[in-house]
Image 1: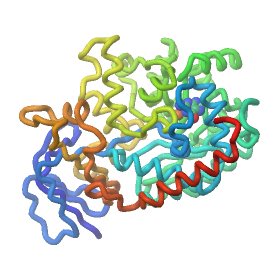
Image 2 (image 1 turned 180 degrees about the vertical axis):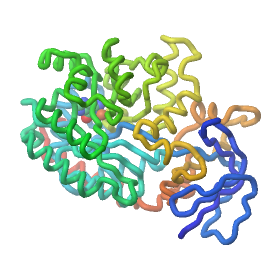
Image 3 (image 1 turned 90 degrees about the vertical axis):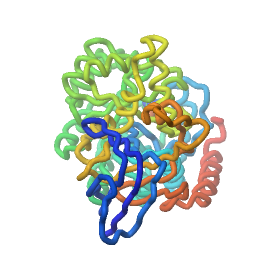
Length: 445
Ligand code: GUN
Ligand code: FE
């Protein structure tokens, strides 16, 4: 048994009463055992004095592509379908085992350093086991899966899958990785989007998701061109088609959901589908602005994600929180998307989206210790006197203020030093990897 005591902190608990607590957090193994003032305990393995520090629940990002981190800066200033066809698909097709591993490690390093402790991740067609290995080694909590794409002639040959193979490989990965490390890692079926998938594949995914009770993670209604293709090919609106396939339920995570009509919003609401809002990506790819205030008013689950590095170009939840708040205000007025609403989406809202609200998303006794210690003693976050801590975090703080990150009770970064990832090796190997991949795709960039 290992024990950890965090002392004298300002704790932004995000519990049911959204209490701010001044005191200590005691952790045994992966679990929070006690929260209170001056906890007096026997021997503990480690004590962190968090005086003058703010402790928050780790951020939950519900849409990430770790396999794309190596493509940061390689696909700027394009709209979705050109971005995919000209850059992302050829680059994904060039991936090898090592490049997948270091792409994941680079992304996870950035995520841990900026306070994200849980991700919903979509990999590419091949070598997903190397992403899972990076997830396992780094200590991050993740739902992940290989992308599935068995349709589309403008897709590089290497990414064109046979339906049965795609399903077989997904199930093999699921059986190997689902519930790994006591449930820290979970499998999620990841059909890319309707445009890339046959009806047969999507129907099978729907049945398998029910059988294994695992999530389905896909993109939907991100771009106007995309929804036109779906409507032309299926005769249905995108979300109606997903519903027709049996996919619309509480275990479906849809990234983006910008271009929805009223019927589609109704399906999302009634079936309990989860929306992952990615404001940075949506602005950079010129996709549009999701109607988040409306979706939230309808009690639809909306959480946040940075998407992939080449459409953002960072994986930083502080950026996403700020954008999620600010982009709505010119249209809907200054009171929508206040700091607390956005902070909830980034923490307990994300936990609810992945069905883990009993385990993570807030700082409460009995929950897993996924915690981030912030140092808000700086010019850009002062004064602190009589300022709401959540306002400081959402509107003033930045990723550089993350001092220590704890996931599943394990310290993965302490005083900004990475504990599970060798930064120098990862930066070096990331460059070596992208250099190797670029040699295979000389015509595109
Ligand atoms: N739609 C289909 N594939 C992708 C992807 O990789 N990223 C984004 N943002 N949208 C997609
Ligand atoms: Fe995406």
